[in-house]
Length: 359
Image (tube, rainbow, N blue to C red; front, side):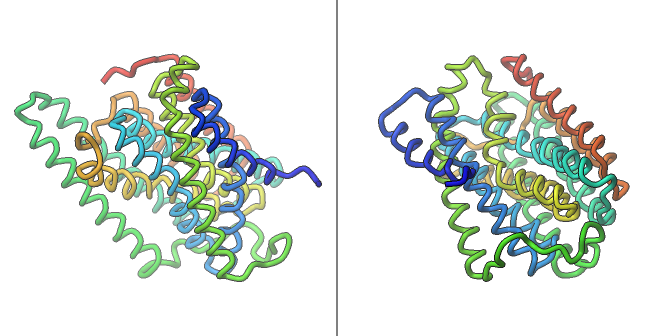
C-alpha cells in the first residue's frame, strides 16, 4: 500500500466515465492528463530496459517514436475536428517542450546531483543541424502564403506544402539511415556511468517491447479523450487556443519522452537525455508535421498548411538557436538547465497573455 504514481491509473476509467457522462470539459481534461502520467512512467521504464540492449542512440529513437504517438493522435483528432490552429500550435509546442522544458529540467536535476555532465558533442551537433534544417524548411510555407495570400494562389500553396512534406519525410528517412546504418559511431555514449545497472529486475526483451507498445496505445487513447475536452477547457478557464496547443496539449502529449529525458539526466546519462529530447523534436518536425499535412487531405475538412504565425516561428527559431548554443560543447550543468527553463516560461507566458497571435 505504499504511495505510488501508479495509483493515478485509476483516472483512466474516471476520465472515460466523465467523457461518457458529458461532464465539464476541465474535469475530463485534467483527469485524462493525470491518467497519462503513470502511462508515461511505464514508457520511461520500458525504454530504459530496451536501451540497455540497444545503446542510448537507438533507445532514444525508440522513446521518441513511441513517446510521440500521443502527439500524433492528438493532432489527428484535432485535424478531423478542423482545429488547424490547434494542430499547428501543438507541433510548435511539442518541439519547445522537448528542447527547452524537458532538456532544461534534465540538466537542472542532473546538475544538482553531478557537478558536470558530459555527453557526445558530435551527436549533439548532428541533432542541432537537423533542427536548423527543419526550422528553415518550415519557414518557407508561411513566407510563401504571406506573399501570395489571394485565393487564386491557393492551389500553389497547397502544392508547395505537399511537396515540402515529401521532402521532409525523405530527409528524415535518410537521417535514420545515417544514424543507424552508415555513421552509428557518431552517436555512441561518452558520458555518464558506463556500467550503471537498472534498479529492480531486468525485463526480457519481449516484455519490455510489449509494455512499450501497450503503454503507447493507452497513452494515445487518453490523449484522444484529452484533446476532445481541450477546446472546452480553454473556453471555461479563459485560455487561448495558442496557449492550449503550445503549452497544455504539448506538455501532456509529450509527457512520456519528457519524463524519459529527465530520468536519464538524473542518472547521469546525458547522452540518452539529449537523444530523447532532441531526437523527439527532430521526429516531430521532419516526420509528424509532414505526415499530418498528407493525412489532412484524407480526414480533415480542409488541407493543413504549415503556415505558422510569425510569433510561433520566431519562438521556434530562437529555441533551436539557444538549444544549439547551450548543448553545443558536450557539457552540461544545473545553470544551463535554468537558462532553458526560463526561455520556455517566457514563451509560455507570452502565449497565455496574447489571446490571438497575429499572423
